[in-house]
Image 1: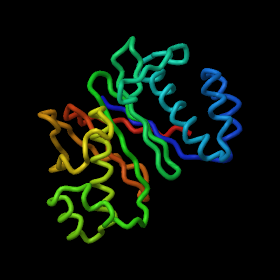
Image 2: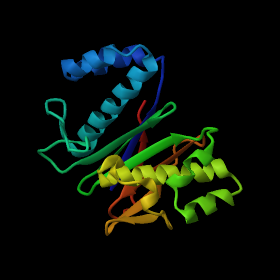
Image 3: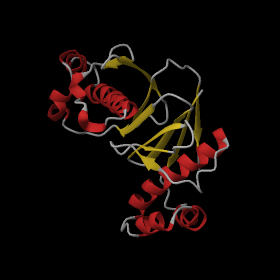
Image 4: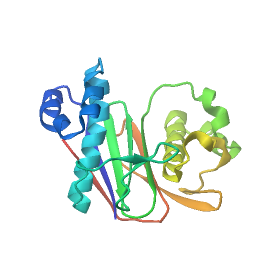
Length: 211
């Protein structure tokens, strides 16, 4: 089973988050949050942590608050005393976190914005770009590919060392260095695209909106 927790930014809930949730985290992280000038930026970071720690506690009965989060050489976070896999993404007003118990997972959420997609032509393979070009809605088609590719990169765990154009999304799958990745579309909000990337073709996915 794969789990996805997500939440929306809310100015109304900001003081509650600062009062009830922020004190649960290390002082160094609390100071980091307090240094943000815009409440939106502070909440994006804090909500990611809240979703992560809440999800790990509810799903796996794991208390992460008294643990030290480690990072790989590519800066991917993990907890070294368990095999829980997780990944966080945010865009616009949405923050989302995916959880898996064994194999690496990745998630990407993107608000469908009016960007100049031609600037990203060489981030796509020829087939992908042709599909975007001939699509009835080029913006949505572009963000479909973009979120899938970003989710794969995050599941792979090597960050930007792998060029996006070096692998091709075909029928919700792709391969990087003989490693196969499966992609699942997550329906959160019509104004956004969201995909998760998995190393197993898991169909059971639980999606939960955390307020």
